[in-house]
Amino acid sequence: MDWAVEAIPDADHLYKRVHRVHITRNGIEPSAFKNLPKESEYMSVDWAKYSTAQETRAREGKPGLNAVVQLTTGEVRAVPGQGVQHLPTEGNRSHSGVTGKKTNRVQMALSRICTVVIPLEQNFQEAESLNL
Image (tube, rainbow, N blue to C red):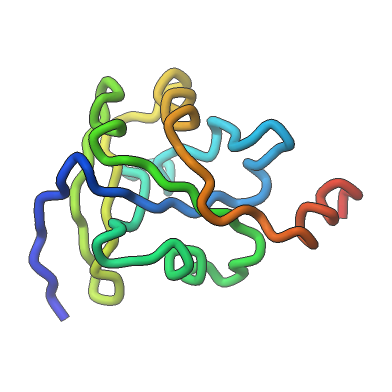
């Protein structure tokens, strides 16, 4: 199905999966915020208008390895060089992108404005602390 591209209001939220390798006891590492694949022009996120945090997490093959963070669109746009676009795909109406190069400074800014809405599952946190 073809979804219409819509403007995402500044007050709306975005969800992003964060793999456990980017989560420490101190929080979300700035390295979690990058354009993937490297050549991509954006970082994938889901628009909360069409997705829940749980749905965002479930899109990954091993959801238990991921936490989900929430970003506010206007705060993302306030980071120099960053934009937000709705980029729906056939299977995901909520798919969107945070556009712009993810320099170290941008990654740090995004890590500071995110809020964890689904933490890493306890059993995966324990495995990490045991280096499993």
